[in-house]
Length: 471
Image 1 (cartoon, rainbow, N blue to C red):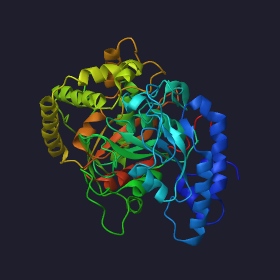
Image 2 (image 1 turned 90 degrees about the vertical axis):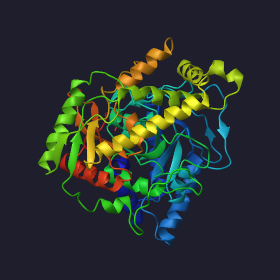
Image 3 (image 1 turned 45 degrees about the vertical axis):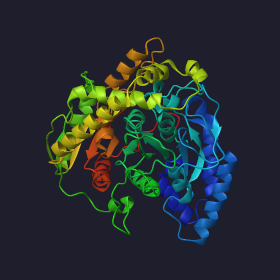
Image 4 (image 1 turned 120 degrees about the horizontal axis):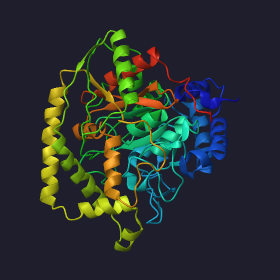
């Protein structure tokens, strides 16, 4: 059977349950595409072909012998910041040797426990710190729609793989936009779940509660199904999102259209004063018209944060970089941006970091309260289309590099501060054929309504027909 990658993940799963497609056949199809296309796209850093074939055999038995989970047998990939038992994890750095852990991270174990087949580890920048994916250990991750442009970051390899048809859907993580940024750059659905929806265990991870795991997919339904597979706390987690009612799922929620909603809209950059590109504003305006045509009420929304709070967020980001356990001799081998962030964070006193966290938590409460009059808030995902590879990176001036990243992504990090769910949707395409995402921010723990609204927009203005030349 040809063109298996044309099918969504759920369509592939349905074909396997009907016996029309085998998991091993699907694995071989994607491995062949990876061999042919990945050197151009920069999606994978490690392939796990034999492990995937063995997992496919187990999935096939499971499909025959029991009521299998919705994505059983579907291929996926793990961002190379997360541990996959027995497989090297490089964290995007050449400063340290890759580690091979005996156990998988909890989110990875959840995926494999639901019968998904992992094809490998996807490309990520050093320690996931920048919003572009250009590590020293691998080629840059490129937008499949324009190979001269960045796939974004830090889940850039995951997004390039899904958009290029190298995997059906992928795992990503998001500490300041790292799922939504590459989803927008690559024409995909990228969902940042609520804080505590998906466990970050068993490692200590991010003590500030900014980073979450979530799906990168071609369709809203695939994203919902992947969220179902990974959602849930590990015992002892510091953050827990309220679970769905027993017997329900995020995928099931899509069977119901959303009620008529009140949507706030804002195009004002949050974390930095910058100019929003006209094409991103066009995408926002077109989405407002689409929402109103579907019967939703759209009103201006206030900017949720005072811009001076950016300094507190940057303090925590730098402290997080400084807390990465590196031997002293590795400091000279990390990327200039990483070194700059670490040196910025190292002298910060614990009291200063805690004061910054307290200020952000207080501001988050104010922001969530201000947004509570809306069922969702619409913003651009990014302030610019995806830039050329190398355009944001400035090894000679890391401060300028960081400033350029802020100008590119002024809408994403605030949602990591509030802990709300947010989704980027590829509802608009530039005249040059570049995908331009828009961001919808939901109420706390409101993924179900957010996904319902996203599915309604997808049905009204489908995007699956937008395919890159490599497709």
